[in-house]
Amino acid sequence: MKINGLYLLFIVLGLSLHGCGNSPVTPLPTESLIVQDQASLLAALQASNATAEIVDSVFQDFFSPEGNIIRVNGVDIQVFEYATSEAMEQEADQVAPDGGSVGTSMMMWMDAPHFYKTGQIIVLYIGSDENTLNLLRKVFGDQFAGR
Image (spheres, helix red, strand yellow):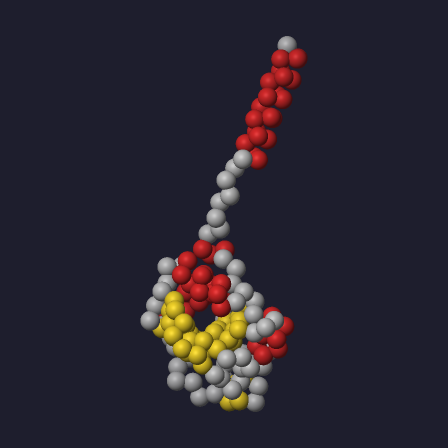
């Protein structure tokens, strides 16, 4: 009786281990997409069922790289991509907590500014559209500066 029970235990254990090695890879949910740069930002926005396309370039005196305007569900956001995350962090550190200034530049925004950062990008959204803000929070988490 002991041998049969031990034999049954090995069969069950073997079948369990066999199933572990052949399980298919499950794709990550949309919320788990890691945004590091502009390309992965576009992918994350589109995976969130948003329309997102680059529509123009933009220069801001307070950020060193040329940025792109991405139209997201009809609303424009500005994306600035840096060569390294360290370079991005150096410039992000210059943004005042309320977004009212960047370094020595004082701003007079037309609407509330919202600054987000991740990986090698800073995103600036100037506006108050709740759907856009919810989408940006979903992709980035909380803003690091703004109102």
